Length: 101
Image (cartoon, one colour):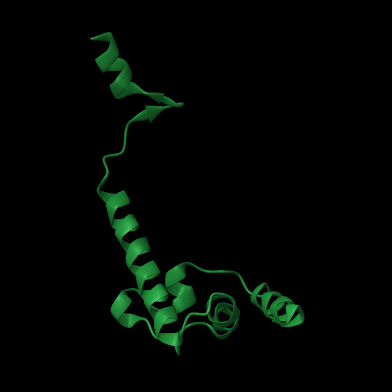
């Protein structure tokens, strides 16, 4: 493996702001994912890491992308469904009221 290549690809990746996983893969659901849609500099680094270092085939790399999109999407949906506690300057008012009562 060529360390210079990894360094070069990493430097290219650092030239633009890193977006969300959805923008990096240009997909919002596992069904939308394709290797051709992944940002080129992101894809080059992933080819080195997932392909050369980890030995994953392109099909397996695609499965990783799909799984990551699915996981992130699920976690975001779950976070939206969780009731937010009322906090006032770091104090959980609901818990304080329950404790006192």
